[in-house]
Amino acid sequence: MTLYFYEIGTDQPVLTVENAQSYTADSVTAADGTVYAPLAEGYELSGKADCSETLRADYRAAYPAQETRLEELEELVAALMFGGEGE
Image (cartoon, rainbow, N blue to C red):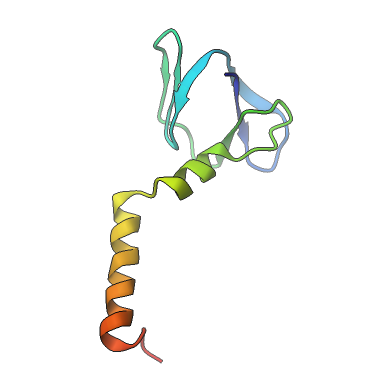
């Protein structure tokens, strides 16, 4: 697959990774083993040349960081135990 790395708010890639094997929210691995990491904040990945996809954001939503998951769990426990946060 070909991935395009672009600054959020633009439609022009600053880097094109051809033959990308995989990606996460923080890295791209090419088929030849080259790893592009860490990826800069304020930039996004797209599988389309027009930079219309947000693959990093989609990845974060599908695979939240452990810290995010713990925060969500704490909020849920507080809601269950105390009926929600302070009103």
